[in-house]
Image (cartoon, rainbow, N blue to C red; front, top):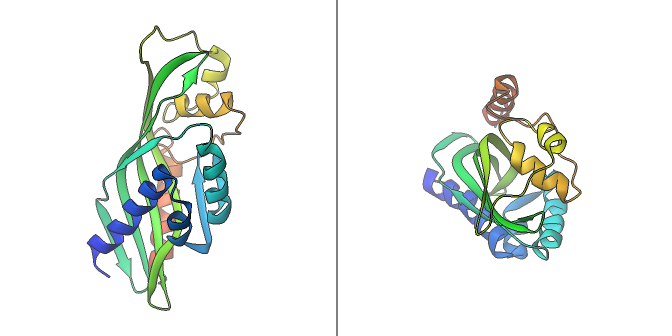
Length: 191
């Protein structure tokens, strides 16, 4: 498989999630694949189910630009700069939330077919902007619980009742980013 074909799988995954194309989303992952993002950590099947449930409340959009691919035998790593774009209501006010990240996917070839084995994000920064009214006062204590690389995304998810881990890879924690890279690159090299 070429680099562009691996990039295509990663792009299709984000598009399928944004469009609510649950069958395609599920088909792009191996059944034992894992996903870890601010609002979810678990299997790909659970991720698809939770994404479907969240879509009823409102969905976001992801921009993704695969830029790096490492292949070793039957395994690959694709890293993609991207954005998470959401339009939530915070305290009754419509806002835009933008989170800049590097999406980090591992892929594996089994029986001649490539699918995703994992999906993670490395968080860079985020922000909230009001759409048509002043930004309401945010709960300072809740906001302070978030790390700088994903503070506003964590705030939104915590407001929605989700538990957000404090140990996700983010540029404010180079140790976690280095561990993420080391683990993924060792996994690919074993392919």
